Image 1 (tube, rainbow, N blue to C red):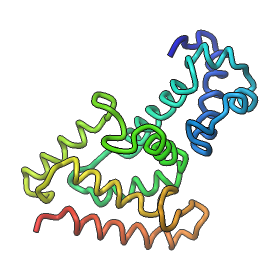
Image 2 (image 1 turned 180 degrees about the vertical axis):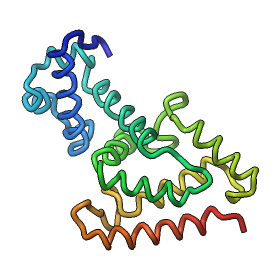
Image 3 (image 1 turned 180 degrees about the horizontal axis):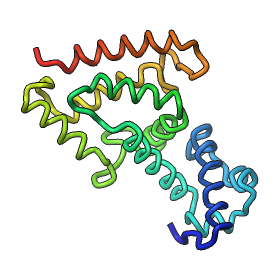
Length: 195
């Protein structure tokens, strides 16, 4: 990023840009997002946006990597209870469907194969280490820790906004979510429990 805001007013503008751009990118993707819509809704101008973020790609990066960090902070992994982690991820997708949509746009428009993000920006070293430790202790089935993590995340996304089958919403009856949580918890436990 080029410049960080130095005043209270600048910080407020910066945050408005982030908030509006998050929704814009979540809805339209990188290619479909329009800077003009973002600056209009954020009540600013292109010059200010470019001063803070440089360009549209860098603005998306700022939002995307912040969303990854948010999920890690809000839903930290518990390698001794991957089933509960999957359920907490499910709940976060209900609260913030825009975050999972951002990751999907990054997959579709930037990295159709391989890791979603490159090397040092992946942020999964700690998760992989905890899964490996749980495997060494016999609490999680053997296998590549990354593959175990990827499977649990994929299971947590079964009803997410990017599901090919059914996208759940927070507006649905609580008992529907409770049933999904119970099924998800049971399936993940069965999948990761050593035989």
